Image 1 (cartoon, one colour):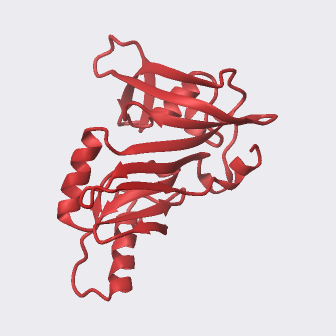
Image 2 (tube, rainbow, N blue to C red; image 1 turned 90 degrees about the horizontal axis):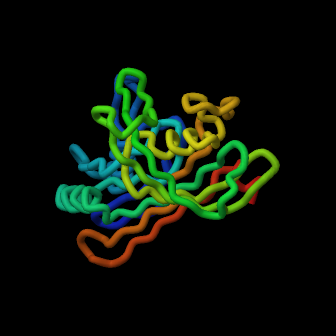
Length: 219
C-alpha cells in the first residue's frame, strides 16, 4: 500500500496485487485496516480512525483505490460513484494482438458467486447485465498488447471477462484463460487513473500511478 493523494477528506492509495480492499473469508488483513493504521500513526490519533471504503478492485489487480476520511465525504463519494461521476481508467496487458487502434466491446455478463467468476452469456439469460467498455491500443509487442481501458458500465470482473471473451485474456489471469501465471500471482491489470470533482472543495482531482514493470517492456 502506497499513499498517492491525501487531503482532509480523502486518501487515495496504490494497492498492490494480492492485497484485499475489504475483509473476506480469507481472514487476511484488508487494505481498509492498513489505511486506518497508517492514518492513526501519521496523525497520532487516539481511539478509532474513520476510513470508509468507496470502491473495490479485485485482489489480483493493482492500482488506485479511494478511501474516505470522513462520513460526509463517504456519503458524497458513494453517490458520485452510483451516478458515474468517478472516472477510472485501467491499463491491461493482454495476450496476443488486437487489430483495432480503438474500439468498444459490448456483451452480456452473468456473475457466478459460487465460482467467483463472470461469464459472457446470451442477453436472455436471467440475471445477465449489459456491459460495455472502450479501449485504445497503447503499444503492441511480439506477444502482448497494452491497452487503455475505460469502463462504461461497472460489472464484477468486467474487464477480465470481456477481454478474454474476445480472445485476448489479460496476462497472468489463469481464471480467464491466460496461458501462464505471473510471478507473485497477480495479473497485468492496473487501475491507473482516477478523475472526479472533489465532493467538498468542488475542485477537479486527477490522480495517476506508474505502470506495472511488465507494461514498460512493450511501450
